[in-house]
Length: 161
Length: 273
Image 1 (cartoon, rainbow over the protein chains, first blue to last red):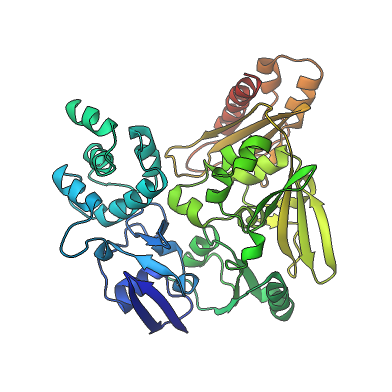
Image 2 (cartoon, rainbow over the protein chains, first blue to last red):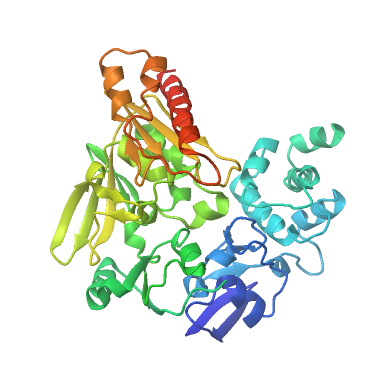
């Protein structure tokens, strides 16, 4: 079936089977492999993308369900060669180790900050409960998200280290 | 993992969906947010020949003051429940339970009606609706009917819905500012409850349990003990009576029975406080 999704601002129309998952549409049809498939059972969050600005797990959504909607992947965050504030914060605060969960973590964080602009550390930990880091690098991930949000708690979290 | 092939039908309205169900009968399955159905299809535990996507039927997404009750459209997402001011003021328990479903990504997609129609005893919201004595509005070939929550859940993933019927609305009483609590025990925040206990004070105190049988169940023995004047601690000791909890990797039957008693006590204490 013809499926049209605006991905990172670009119209993408591809003829795919109805059973095609959104993550396969992004990786295989659009060639955007920044979005990762981790557990493939909607547990780990590595496949998190934004659909109309909200975080979803793209391994548990059909491309057909996103037809006509707007999707943002990790490739769509940086603008004019400048990293998105959340990407920059992950770099500055060493919010990644092996990097496999990072795209999903960043997308989940972008959605979280949109919903809670000035999150507490608790808000960030709760808000990222759908994303797993097998390196267990949570401390710096949380710090990066707090810093990206300009949260008052980010300075305290940094000095406690 | 990829679902087995299916024919995809997008319903633009409830009438569209009902027409598709009439045409395809038992071969068809309704898709709302897909948070339960798509994982089952990927594991090939569900292989519907026709998938009727009702996810865009926008007029079934609302939380409305309906006088003596709050009316909630079946396609209202968990995210919209957990941020609803009306629910905060009139039915706080539903808002609080919705906020504990899955994780943010799941709550952005999953719907109240989907959770109810799926009928999983490990789901959070069906137990809350059971404790609230909610009513479900159902449309089908024979017209519209209402089903009480206590009559709706029939068995594991089995409900009172006929193959040609669509759940359209969930009606919950206005409990106002009365006490409530949801105690959910799990290994990770995003996991299903190993056991959960919901307590709501609305006149009398009602208690419902998650994952303590093939359906969500009311803890009637606890409610009766409270009515008879038992203390919270004594009443909670009856929580596992009449239940048939499953045994799995997470917990034995005995452990679930223990959890039901402990979580019920905590829920009653918080609801009373």
